[in-house]
Amino acid sequence: MLDHIGVTVSDFARSRAFYTRALAPLGIGPLMEVSAEQSGGCAHVGFGGDGKAYFWLSDGDSTAPSGVHIAFAARTRAEVDAFHRAALAAGAHDNGAPGLRPHYHPTYYGAFVLDPDGHNIEAVCHAPA
Image (cartoon, rainbow, N blue to C red; front, top):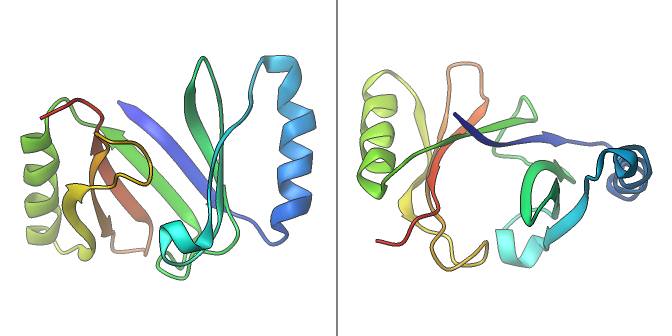
């Protein structure tokens, strides 16, 4: 159901250091970093285990006033497309049309909307086309 979640933090370096230490006993650590240049806005660090980042920190995401990001797992790219259409029809605001996001990984296919409360909601498929 959930692919990953993210939160915006007030002090990126402090929060990165905190979660690195606090989550280590659980076998969770930083696995991936996305720079502000790569994301087109702010830096992110993804924590997880077994090669999968599922908890993300952001240094400030101006596209999500709530500071909350939730990504739902989709089985196919067609499901991502259908999610985007249905969310817009239900009143969401577009926050990123369906498409590949190769700066995450080569087959990362996602779509983003802002829900009525400004939460950044995504559907993502990791499978190849």
